[in-house]
Image (cartoon, rainbow over all chains, first blue to last red; front, side):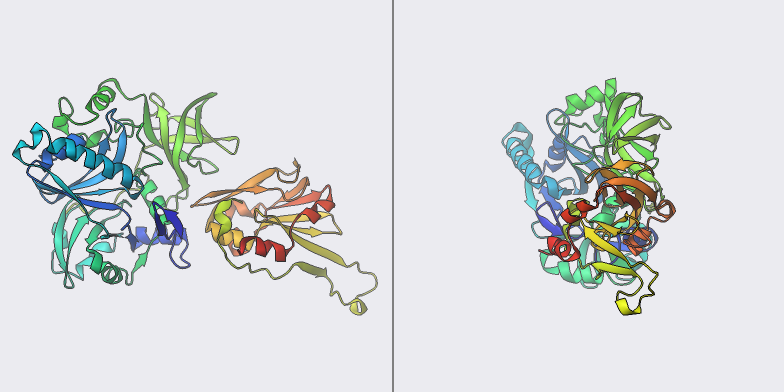
Length: 357
Length: 161
């Protein structure tokens, strides 16, 4: 058990090692207790416009019961947090944010809601936030996740494609299920009311599903090329630098009015000064903080790195000065005072396995 | 080894002193054979040195407690043979998926040999940390340094709070 964002959380369960646990999610299925994450509802007539002010996403064109990865930006265009936003209707959104950013996010939301609701914008209706305190969030991930879940419901899961969600009847429960996750595998994130968390977790963790800890969660997401806030993203990093320009809605790029738009637009137009890229590293794994060199010049820093259990190679991500970001660029990283070869490699490192119908 | 190794896990090695060759019972010893004593000593950073007083060589390893805290070891970095090291110098590292842990020389001396098998089979460190998974052999320049290290009892007490 380790302390994590105010929770005590398992790195692994029982005597299943991190590599075995990781591999089980890639070949079978694993269940992650991610109830520490912050789940919130935003409701009100102008909820779409409010969230389009807080994020650069195109939420008005997002279909109902669809989700998108997004970013909450500060005034400079730096990332306060990354988030998954699910639209239920124009006036109802379900938002999941990081536990480690709880205080910062909630204070920001409250401040911005107050500003919004007392402004002209709210003349067609105000917006309210409800934090789903003590709700559970369970992520069932892996190639056998769908068949496992299908056995528990009459809902045809083939119709629930990657990035969509639905309320699904399951053994007497009626649960919000979003298809997606943080592993690169097919899977589901299931939101559970406080009184039902233990029972639902038991229902979802029988053979062949294995309980999976934070350790495997980190190695799986890194193989999938996904960012961990605090490692790979922070408030001094724009979505363009982070390789997340795609979260900026097409029709919002030129004149969308969102907080941080000026900084984002500057990076979109003139190119960002640095960029997040993937690496394959020879010899020793490069971890967070390892310096990246081109010749004698330090041109960046590693933000996450592990020996990949799936590829048996050392993978990493980090930021490099623009110009050194192209696929195949040969650079070096410093680990224990020695230079190791690092080649810029496209992400994801492991091919995703999403259900797109 | 670093602070992640603080969890309390039982050591599987009950031997503080191993009488290697042959039985310590004096009356059964053939008169022409020399009894060698292997002394095991531990550091707070979870390294172990098994010192053979006949050859003057210490076999360096990480403890069973350390390997079980680290989890699956996937990469081991070892020093160059011939390197002179001082006690507490960093001489390599052990990496699991979870973390990297530096290895420090528990004693001063010259690296005589490294365990080449670990480059192909880093998992030996989990299976048999203090035997097949040994890291390197050091010819001690000052065996009295062993006196600064812990015996098994003290070592165990150092992490079993």
